[in-house]
Amino acid sequence: MPTRYPSPIRPGRSTKVFRSPDKALQHIKEIYDRNVTYLRRRFDDFCNKEGLPTERSTAHYPYILFKTKTYPSVDRRLSYGFVTQPGVYSTTVTRPDIFDHYFKEQLTLLCENHSDAKLEIGVSDVPIPLHFALGEDFYLEGELSSAKLDALPLLFDLPDLSMMDDKIANGIYLLDGGEGADVQPLSLFTAPRVDVSLQRLKHYTGTSSEHFQNFVIYTNYQFYIDEFIRNGMRLMSYTEEKELAKQRSEYVAFVEPGNKITHNANLPGGMSKDGFPRIEGGTMSRIPQMPAYHLKRANGSGITMINIGVGPSNAKNITDHVAVLRPHAWLMLGHCAGLRNSQRLGDYVLAHAYIREDAILDDDLPLHVPLPALSEIQLALASAMSEVTGLDDYEFKRIMRTGTVASINDRNWELRDQKELMWHFSQSRAIALDMESATIAANGFRFRVPYGTLLCVSDKPLHGQLKLPGMADEFYRERVDQHLKIGLLAMEKLRAMGKERLHSRKLRSFTEVAFQ
Image 1: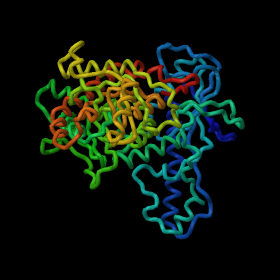
Image 2 (image 1 turned 45 degrees about the horizontal axis):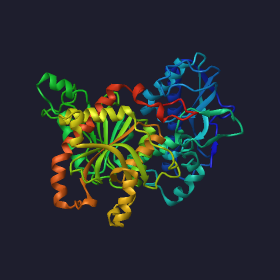
Image 3 (image 1 turned 135 degrees about the vertical axis):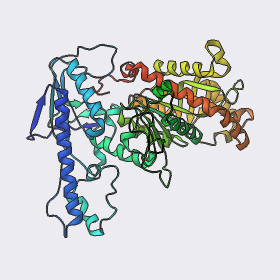
Image 4 (image 1 turned 180 degrees about the horizontal axis):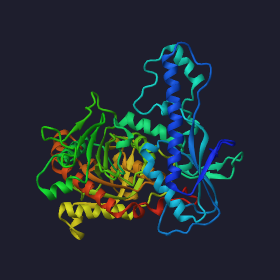
């Protein structure tokens, strides 16, 4: 059922109106920093002073309000940076320390595309939960007594799930109907929704949100991560070859779980006294559930790779949270079961369509909604494969098929009735099966993040080639390196396209938010 979109405006609070995106962003930072600092000081007093405070401590998120009486004057090829009709639009915002470039770009586009643009910045009616004000590295309950833990909800605002749903992204919100009823959403995510995902990203991946890059690769095997680490360390190492050093210097650091940062030895300050890349931090004593690794560029346009493990639940979980960072593209690189007898182990599958039998997103994105193949992603993957394999055009068909990928939620699907499976796959024309790709594509569609899938055939259960230890080891050794090279090169090609071209109008709805 559609739910209400509450206006974040708080009547009576002081606001300022700007025409300059830079000045508007500066005021957002001032509000956020002031309010978070207040909450931290009050919590410090709460922890260190005898007795309990007598007054409740509350601070609120900043908000952006955008008003226009004009229709946009915009290049119709663009998919974001404007509102479709005159009106009042608003959103709460958080963490300007990591979203500053993003906010500046979105506000600049609004001002450029609407001649009468006004940016009102103020303090919203949405409280900042204490957990979020303390940051990703603080464990709030760690040293509190039982008495203070009991008093915490009475003295501070705690996370409220009613403020963190995905009704805007799902397109099922209604206007509030009360104060500020004419105010429509400006972005897909409210500030509390962003904050909870930033916290969970740190929990699941072992790295802080500041390290995540705009191009994300998901995989379901550690072998790919091992090769990604080797590649990242190679790029960080010093070389005396000027051209090679220039190429490596496009990436400034490599980050591992625990926020272990290996700096690029080819850049100023990146080399240690012993001639190796300078390292900050240390590795984690325990690997997180879905470890993330980041090959960083200075402007955030590098590559993040995450081992999401097996299954659609993991795939939905991590993409739910990565989406708030507004990446420019994400890809699934992993293994699959080949369903056709003509396929061989090690062949590639480029997904053009998906069968969603994961049962994890049905309530958020109905099954009747198609997931379109995005030409920019498909062309980048095909071009990268051509360069890496040395094959082109008709020769592609020797090692790669395009077609439908089925994603299911049962790892032991092979144990079902074989006739039933054959009929099912024959009717759908599916050529491969896995457990994550359709989920990642569906959440890409839902959150307006360009998506794609390139899989490698690791077994053919319907044809007697099961995934067994000996067969798997040989397959992994032969294909992982090449598969990852294709994915990394595809990401470089997507980056070269530019985000204006990459973000597709196919993913935008009728009444779309302005922010990318």
